[in-house]
Length: 332
Image 1 (spheres, rainbow, N blue to C red):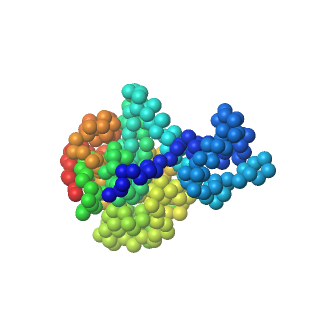
Image 2 (cartoon, rainbow, N blue to C red):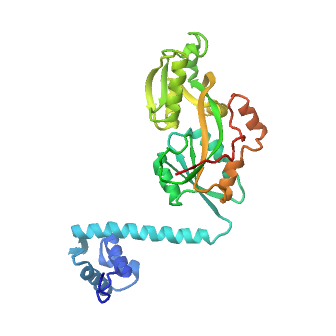
C-alpha cells in the first residue's frame, strides 16, 4: 500500500498552457502577447513545469525558440489535452441547450449508402433539429462504441456475431431484394445477350468484398442460377462501387427499395431484379426499449409508410416492412 505521506503527483495545467503557447507561437514575445503577461512571468512558469517533468522543454534560437525532442513530445500531449478541453466545453454548451438533440449513430461500412440516407431521412427532417453524427466502421468496433455509450444505435446489414461479450438488442426493421444496375451502354449490351438472369453470365461485376454478408448471399444466388460472373472489382465502400459503375466498368447492385434514387443519382439502367437475395436492415441498440427520441423515430419510420415508400416497396417481393419492427434478440 502506498504511504499516505508520499507526495501526490499532479500536473499544473496553467504551466502547461504557458509552454503550449510558447511552442505554438514560436517565440516568447508572441506568447506573452497572446497570454497578456510578461515574458519573465512566462519563463518562470515554464521553468516550474520543466522541474516537475525533469527535462528541458525548449532552448532559445535567436529571437525564436526551438523545442527539444522531449519538448516536442510534451507539445503533442498538450495539443491533445487542450483539444479535448475545447470539446468538453463545446459539449457542455450544447447540453445546456434543451432545443438541441444529438444522435450518435454507427453505420456498418458495408451498409448501402443510399439505404442509410433513406433510413436517416426522418431524423434529418425532424423539428426541432437533431444533430446527427455518423460513424462508419466494422461491426466489432461499432459494438464496442455502443457498449461504452459513445453510440446511441447502429445501422447494420447483419446481426451481431454470436459469442460477443456485449449485450445488444437487434431489431429487424425489414429487408429488400436487389436490383442489378449498370451504365446505359453496358446494360444495353447485356440485354442483347438474352434475358435476365442468364444475361449476367460472364458479365463484368463490381461486388462487395468477400467478408460481407451481402457478397455471400449474392454468390449463393449466382450458384443457384448457374451464373459465373467476371469480377473486375471488389469494394468495401458501396458508394465507390456505384461511382466506378457509372464509368461502364461493370454491373453493381443496389437495394430495390432505393432503385429509383440510384437510377436518378447515378444515371443507371436496371438490368434485372431479384428477391432471391438482398439486404436486411437491423437497428442495433444497447437497450431493449427506445429511450432516445431519435432512435425511436428510426425504429418506427416504416410503421406507416408514406405513398412514396409504398411505391418503392412494390418494386420488390421483400420490401422494407414493419412486421418485425420491434423484434429484439439479446446477445451476450
